[in-house]
Each structure stands twice: as C-alpha cells, then as structure tokens.
Amino acid sequence: MGIGAPELIIFLLVILLLFGSTKLPKLAKSLGEAQKEFKKGVAEADAESAKPAAEEKVTMTKAEVEAMLAERDAEARRNAPPSV
Image (cartoon, rainbow, N blue to C red; front, side, top):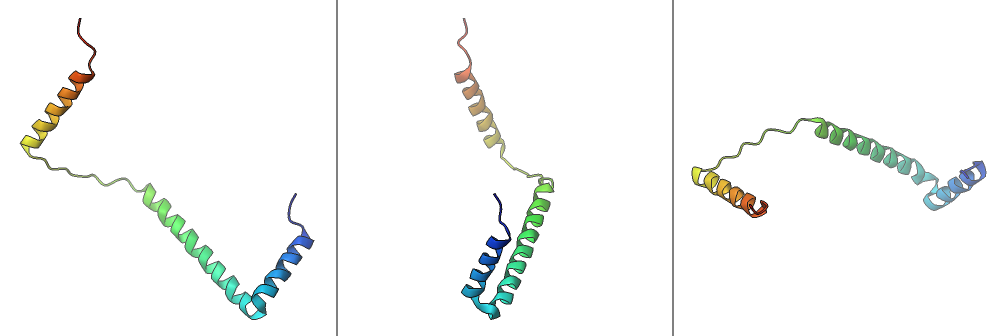
C-alpha cells in the first residue's frame, strides 16, 4: 500500500492551505538547506570515524606502576583456583 496521486494532491493542497503560497518557496528552501547540512554532518562524522585513533601517551611514576602491578597480582591470586 503506497501513496498514490490522489493522496499526494490532497497532501499538497493541505500544505498550501496551511503555509500559503508566499511561504511555500521559503519552506522548500529551508528544507533543502537543512537536508544539505544533515548530509554534510553525516559525511564529516563518517570521515572522523575513518581516521585512525591518535596514540595516547600515559605517564606514570615508578611507584604508580609498582602499585598497579601489585594490585593486578593480588587480583590474579584472588581469582585463581585453590591449589591442591
């Protein structure tokens, strides 16, 4: 079930009555500009997602690294199955 010619004509007449003949060209222009901006935004988002992620540098002190390793070892011991 699709939109046929009679439905389309009725729809266009209702739009014409609601907005008037003077505002219709302005409405069409603004819809076209909005569509163009939307497509531009989608293209930019696709370009951003295609870029490889920048390498992030993390700096830690020796004490922070040792604390992190100790925490990781303690977690591994807690999750390890009991020895027989």
